[in-house]
Image (cartoon, rainbow, N blue to C red; front, side):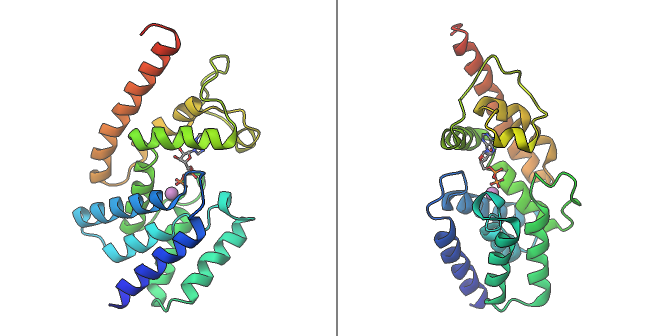
Length: 215
Ligand code: ADP
Ligand code: NI
């Protein structure tokens, strides 16, 4: 009962915070990550409650949605404070959410099974058909081109270059999305990623062929 209530509270909080977002963090992204995390958690024998709650809250402190990383963390810790979680669960949730981001290449790897599962679920949502859709939607929202054949396909863009909008949707596949398959933690996620990865490769092959007028 209490856990059900906390999950409902988290759903409402996320709807309120991310409801209007169109940068790829809308509530449906959260819903998909949650469902996928629960599915993997069952296969892997992990704590489903922790996975659900971490998935629901994982984008709350994202710097893209907050004035500063600190402001985002404050939003998250305020919510946790108001929801009477035991100290271990609270610490576990905070650890998962702060360490799971891809941007944290220099941060320590996610330590617990639950963290690795939520990270996998989030990364799975960035690849395959959904990943393709989100990437073009994000690029459009940022005013980036879909593709620019005069730009080399780069895998080494810096964060500053991203912000200056020098990337394209297609480039994002090479700089990030095609690298995600190799980063999956759990066997269940690796399997799902295989299929989704292949679909992206087919899409890109076809995209370039059509671009060149070959198809
Ligand atoms: P999350 O925090 O959910 O893992 P991100 O904040 O990294 O995701 O990105 C949200 C969505 O926007 C993802 O689908 C991602 O691939 C896409 N995206 C992020 N950065 C770019 C970019 N520079 N160009 C195109 N798409 C992007
Ligand atoms: Ni996410």
